[in-house]
Length: 371
Image (cartoon, one colour):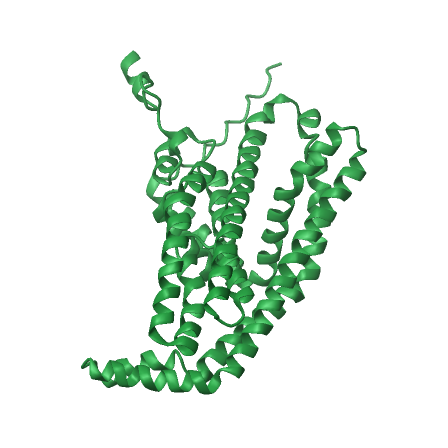
């Protein structure tokens, strides 16, 4: 008796062309980004909680090595994360309230300064519309609007504070569990674990470097403003510290408010002195010295760092400016790392370790030579 002939194998699905794969990838990316933008109120605190846990996780690792129980080490990580969040919340709340009071106290002086700026610009022969637009930036109503938006942002951060606290608890507990991943799945997942361990180290070094330089800049700027008699020097020191976490353009964001206030209370000479101090201190530390340490920590090109600030601010709001570097590093780790064919893209993004060592042939060349 003959056996029935085996059923013919199903034909393999046709392979997608490279161009079609690119189009599908871009379409999927747009959908993901739109979703992130719609859910920015959830995504922002979630990423912030993850960054806090990444920064604090070495404490848990060190305590476990000293023989602490896993639950106790995880609790220490959570407590440290809560302390960092509490300090940030108090700083933002204090700065926002004080800024609003300053605008109200100096409303008349701001109005006079705005009118003087209009007359000065007209004397230079500039168009009236340009003069009026420039002066409107100094008007009390504009600054009150800014103060209100700052207050609203602070309120939003404080509202999301509860969710961040919860995220820190969950992520710290999960991070402790992930440390046993190799035991559960074997040595085959070491490359994946290595990539994410490298990502965590980069994020940690980035924020440690920025916090160190931000603290130095904040102390020097605050003392200089206090010596010049600029009102609320503590507020501007906090602003200098916070804006130091915004790559490339943070210096300008931290300079404009105290410079405008110096113009109001002391005139052009005081304003120029403030600008000169900020340029000497902030440019020397933030532009000449700090980028070397940041580059060693994250391996991102200056162009990509600058673009990432604009891009992530557009996607998830103001918090995206502070979280732009970790988000960009995460995208690179998920999309590019682990695929040898994307080494040139990693190198283009600033990852010097992706360059092909001397004497090693690029992917595909060695194979062709053997043939």
